[in-house]
Image (cartoon, rainbow, N blue to C red):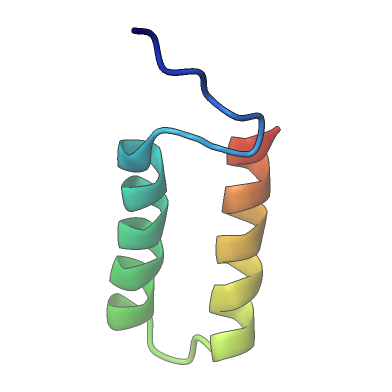
Length: 50
């Protein structure tokens, strides 16, 4: 039986990579605001969906 992927789904490993990138950036960059981090995370997730 083959699983069909919905249009709004993406591979979990790609999601993990984006979240890990955001976490690493948040931990390492001083002066980074939460809003900047959320904006970057949102943009990366939208790119993944496109």
